[in-house]
Figure 1 (spheres, rainbow, N blue to C red):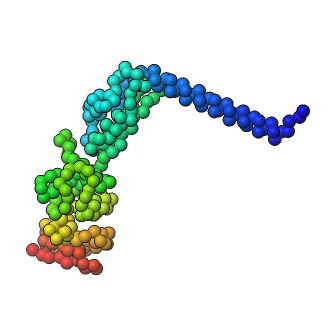
Figure 2 (cartoon, helix red, strand yellow):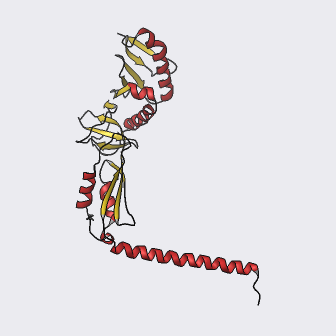
Figure 3 (cartoon, rainbow, N blue to C red):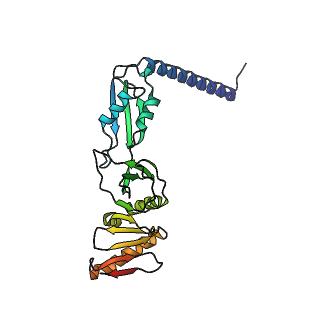
Amino acid sequence: MKISKKKLFRLLQSLVWLTLAITGIIVFASATRDNTTLICNSLIIDIDKSDTRQFVSEKDVKHTLLLGDANIMVGEKIGEINFGHLEKDLNKNPYIKNAQIYIDAHGNIKVKIEQREPIFKVINRQGVSYYIDENGKKMPLSANFTLRLPIVTGFLDDNGDDRGLVESCILEDLQKMVVYIRQNKFWSAEIEQINVSKSKDIELIPKLGSHKIIFGNIDRMEEKFESLYIFYQEGLKYVGWKQYKEVNLKFKDQIIAKKF
């Protein structure tokens, strides 16, 4: 009996898929069996160091891994280590954004740490200081490392805690403003402090000059910064940076500047 080319092709195709499936099962079973007997040869820690952040050290990570609920010890069977618990323990660290643990084919346990990135420092009216990160979450200050960041002070309506979610609308607005400032080379170099007045006006304190900038709220934020830049270039550039004590941007389409 002759088999048509079409049926032969389908038969061969089915055999190929069956072979691949069986191979996959064998590889998976082998890997599972190997992981239960594989010995931990070494612990390799990779902490992102793309900038000057040094909140988390290898010593901190090893301390967590050795004292956690499912500690890692070189020489132990990898199958007896609970990696889910270890990642959970690492992610409890207030300076760690994400921690991942995986195994290579040689029995090395690799730990990859991504640190959180603070964008400004808060000093509230109760004397509590903390950072706000790029996602708008609080971070406690580090006893071992200090970053030079814009400082936020004043009437912030925060709960006084140095970690957890931001619960203040004004801090949420300031996080958006600082993100904008950081993306602009001129303003990131110029603005060193942000204060919130009792009336909830945002006040910017620049590095150059003796004036403060009454920004109001973050409505028309880009427009206000553009107007201020023009005022700097066409006004202060010629009369001097120390002639004014206050520059008010609260009102649409105008800048009110007060001299000493």
